[in-house]
Amino acid sequence: MPSKNKQIMKPHLILCEGIDAVHFMIAMLGELEQKTITNSFQALDFGGNENLPAFLKGLPVLPGYNNVKSIVIVRDAETNHASAIQSVKSALKNNGFSVPVSVNCVSQGDGVEHIGKHTVLTAFSLFPTLSHETDDGTLEHLILNNLREPSAYEALNDIDEFLKILVNKEGSFTWPHKTRLHTYFSITNKFVAMKVGEAVKAGVFNFRCEEIKNFTFLLTQIYNASENT
Image (cartoon, rainbow, N blue to C red; front, side, top):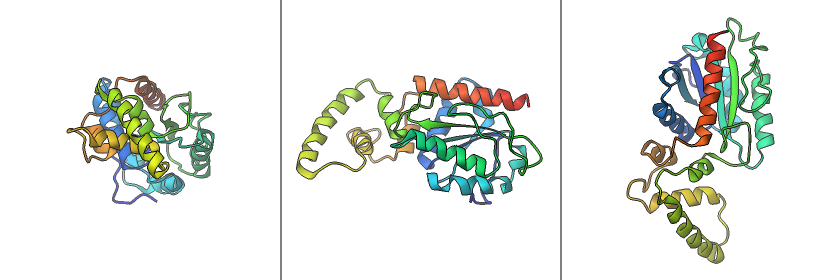
């Protein structure tokens, strides 16, 4: 359940899986040219994926909820994007929110009777694609695919060769994508020792990529739909 001390400041919410995703979304909103979107959306951390149902259940008691017009949920697809989609849909349905047909679709605003006094449109999207074309993966995969520095991929090739040596000596890594990304951070002066969210805020990610264009289109859709409801 969300803390009652967490105040809703904007009419459109992006509920994120973890603080790194929150920092990612805050940085993304700061990069957008559509200032109406930038100024209307607020990113909140719902915790781990297992915490989403409880967070949604407690969301209507947060200060400022009566002004909420839309909710966009963003989480990792992880190793099974079909399961991730079903998990988000179930969390929405079981807590009385309208359920979008699929990923990156805006709900029709039905099914919110117990929330009561106003319609809250919903949508959800999954890392790493942030689009209708879902795939397994995480926020780290998205960042690895869209590093801002032109020299990053040459560095990643060297990192991959180094990690192959370590795997041969020590065995496989539990989260190879995290290992690759944090190794990249560690060999740069700018991002060394940073967490993912910190590195995103410091400029590691290229926000001009197609994934962000797709997600921005979703934010625009749900903003327009909710403002016209």
